[in-house]
Length: 312
Image 1 (cartoon, rainbow, N blue to C red):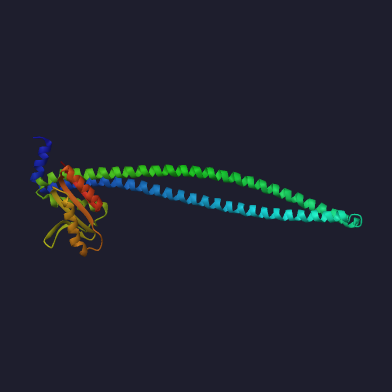
Image 2 (image 1 turned 180 degrees about the vertical axis):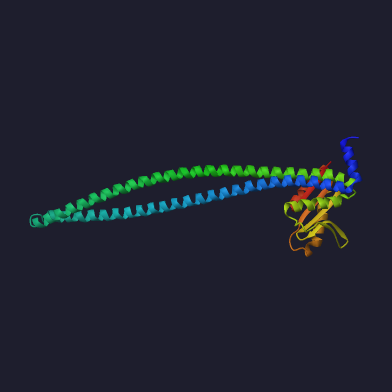
């Protein structure tokens, strides 16, 4: 007799041993899945924090750029106003020079005074030219700073695009992990469904206990709460809990996608006694391939968590 046969014989003789063996295997598998989910959630949260910091830095740089641009616009406006005033002064000076030329013979003293005024005006013009030169230099520096900021913004956009790609890859990995977990649940369900025959319990009882332990491990179901069978209006609900609200249907073989309709009907029967929208579970031990596809599509449309043990 092989070791496996001996083990099965021992489990068949001792239901209590079989129960402990099943719980041990369940806990090991569930703990591994939980650890992997927590690690993935931690990486995802850290990535969100980095994205938030990057957005804050980006907004701050944009704000500074906008302020610098507004200052430059105001300075250009003042320069234009000064230029208009200067043109007006030149016009007035031309008129005064014309009058001075006509009265030069009679107003020599006034001409000398006007020459002094012209000298002062020339000095002012020189100062204005120097100020204009400094303003031009400041404008060139501002243009250089603006160019640097544009380059930094370009690098920031490239880093942001890389981060988006990493986030996309992370989401794909999470979907692959969900697929692996779903497959693992199905394999466990099929294997333990066969094992339950030797343990002397029905597949419905086993599925209810299996889901109860899983939800407790996930923190969805408190330790002092349990999944039970519930009957209402001659309808039996295989898996039920009022708080948190949970409704489930268990079937050993799904002949059609009507199993989804059965579950939704039972949800409507108990909806009035629940304080929140219930989590919905459909557990199928065996289903034909086409039926399994229909069940997956309808479950996704109705927010039902589907577990199929074996597809034939």
